[in-house]
Length: 167
Image 1 (cartoon, rainbow, N blue to C red):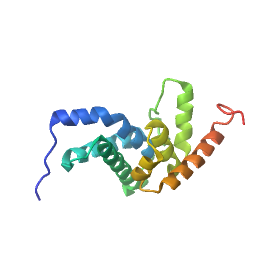
Image 2 (image 1 turned 60 degrees about the horizontal axis):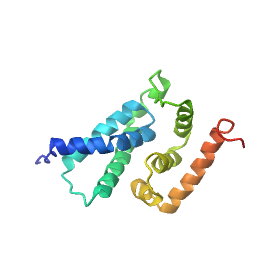
Image 3 (image 1 turned 135 degrees about the vertical axis):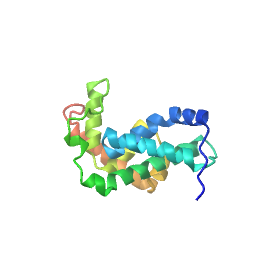
């Protein structure tokens, strides 16, 4: 089997700089911990480096990176090895920290949501993707994305009741 060509260093550095927060943030939202997000991040950019794929435009490249991140995250979270280990959330590992306490509370509430609601909310609010783009990344219908956003917002509102919402 012939090895795939690696991309040039300068181009790769530029792509990583442009998309590192997007890929890592989605991996973190999907896996729930830094160690797995680090692994996903490395695997996604390794796959990008080795794929040799030509992209029509930056939108196509971003969609490919997001879809690959979702798929790689799924592999990590579904692995039998992971199911036999102690989750990092049960360890005294350094949690994700933001500058403002309110941001930390919103992030913690977001992490408590089921993945079906957490990912669309993360992609919509943190990555500013449209419902059409989210549908492509998650391989679901746009109507399903809108429903998950609505239900996820309701659950977040309930979790943050009293802190950010009066009702």
